[in-house]
Image 1 (cartoon, one colour):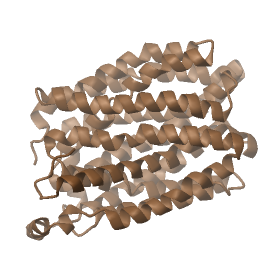
Image 2 (spheres, helix red, strand yellow):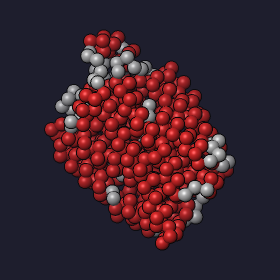
Image 3 (cartoon, one colour):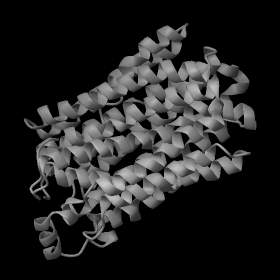
Image 4 (spheres, rainbow, N blue to C red):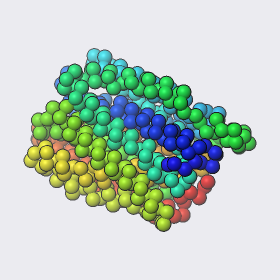
Length: 430
C-alpha cells in the first residue's frame, strides 16, 4: 500500500488517496446498508410485505447500480477522465438521494429514492479500483484493495449502529437524513484533495498521450470475458454476494422478529459483531492472498474457498441458538470466514485483464455481484419468507437463513475452481 507506482506517484500521495477512498467507501456502505436495519420500522410504518422489503433493499438499488456501472467504468478508463472528480460527483449524488429517502411518504417514493442512491453509487468502485491499481505494484495489490474493501464491513457496522440508534431515538426518516447529508461535504473534500496520477504527473501525462485510445467497449468486455479464470471468479463472487446481501438484510430482521430486539439493539450488537468480523476477515483475506499467493498464485483464492465452507455449520448453529447473545457469539466466525474473499477477489479481477480494461473488469464483476447478489439476494429470501409464513409464521425467516447457510458451499466450490487457473493467467496481460 505504501509503495509508489511506476508512474512516479509519491508514497504519501498513494497513502492519502487510499485513506480518502476508504472513507468514501465507508460512506458508500453506510448509505447502502442503513436501509437493512431500518427495514422493519419502515415496513410497519408503510405497511410493506417481505417481498416489498426485498425489492426496496435489493433490486431497486442494484438494477440501476449495475446497468450504469459499465458505461461509468468505460469513462473511468479514458486517459482524459479525472477519476477522483468522477467519484466526487457520484458521492454527492448518492448522499443527497439517501437524505431524500427520509421524506418518502409511500413505497413508490422510497423505491425511487433508493434507485437514485444506486445511480450515484455506480460511480464509486470501478474508478476507485482502477485508481488504486495504478498506484500500487502487483505484489501489493491484494492488500491495497483489501484495505479499500474495509469500507464494506466498517460502513456496514456504522450503518447498523448509527441507523439503529437513530431509529430508536429519532425515527427512521431522521436516520436517513442524518447519514446522507455529510456525504455531500465529503464530496467537496474528494474533489479538491485527490489528484489522478495519469493527469497530474508530468511523466504520466506524456505516457498517456503516447498510448493508443481506450479499447472500444465491446472489445474491452471481450478481453475481460476471454479469461476462464475471470468467468469462474464472477460466478464465485456473485454467489458470495447473493448470500452476503441476502443474509445481512434478513439476519437483522431475524433478530427483531425471533428474539424481540429493537432496531437499536440489533444495530449495536449485530453491527459490532458483524462489522468486527468483517473487518478482520477482509484484512486477513488480503494478507493471506499476498503472502501465500507470492509463493503459488492459486493460493490467492485458497482462503476464500476454505472459509466459505467452514462457515456453513457455524452459521446454522447461530440461527438455531435459543438466545440472541449466544446467536451473536456463534455468528462471529462465519462473518470472518465469509469476508475473506473481498481483497483476493477484486485483486485477481484486476490481474486477469489488460491494463486499459481494469475499470471495466471491476465494473463487470460488480455488475454480476450486485445484480445477482444485491438485486436478487434480499428479494429472493423475502419472497421465500412470504411463501413459508403460512406454515412457520415469524420463524419463516429462520428457515430461510438455514438454506442460505447451506448455499455457502456454492461460492466455495467456484473459488476453488477459479484458483486452479490463476497460475496460468494472473498478471500475464500487463
